[in-house]
Amino acid sequence: MGIRMNATIVLAVLALVFALTSLGFGIAIANSLRERGVRASPWLVRFMIFKYMAEYKRVTVAQTGAVGSLYYGCAVSATIALVSGIAMILTVVV
Image (cartoon, rainbow, N blue to C red; front, side, top):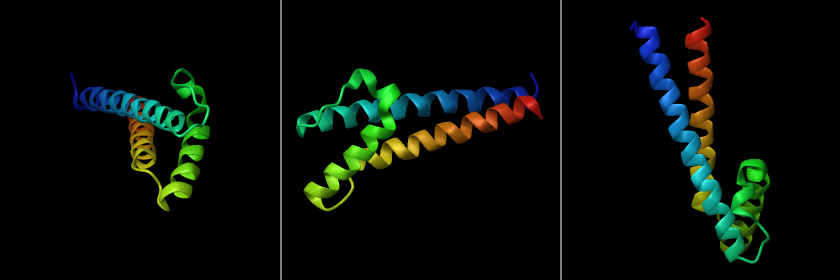
């Protein structure tokens, strides 16, 4: 196995781990919204994550004056997953 293949595997694993982490944060956001009386289904997180993130941000700012920590965890892990996935594709193509 060459260095390019090793980099591809590492980036693929990194993308998968952070995608699952983002999903976990999304489920926690949906549960937090439900506790606050907002309709949110943890089962629909995959399809409505951006709506739930925006709603969570709005609700937490209204209640505490600051954005909740779950928002940043979800945003950062999704961004790392996206960047890792793009880098993985580039190592295969280039």
